Length: 138
Image (cartoon, rainbow, N blue to C red; front, top):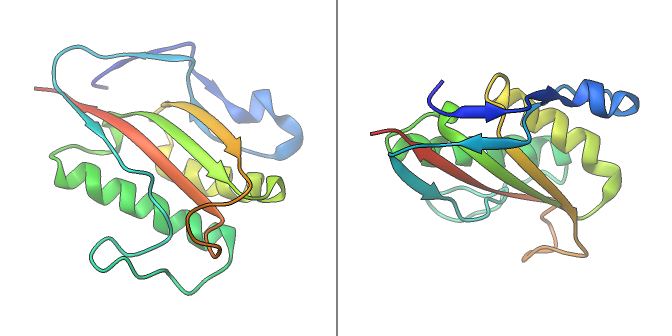
């Protein structure tokens, strides 16, 4: 792995009641490379900014994470270079669905993560937004 992950853990240990299975850590150490700061990704197409048709938090999260993966790859990296995510959801009841879906994309990666429940996002149809930071080694 490109970076040193400090205090790795899985959310199945920290949130056993929520049946989550996300690989996270408390800190990430990077050296060299280029840092990529991603804009908060929403459930819309990268090329035309058209929203996906779904109001399902799982489908919206898949689109958000696909966008994140695509952008990191366009910058010359891969998901293993993801070091931090910030997750914004509009309803705490969607937390498990959003985090479970996000976990499919970060399995074995162990980024640091912050999660927030917010009143609203930029468009009323959006249930989730995730921004990220990646460091791509030289």
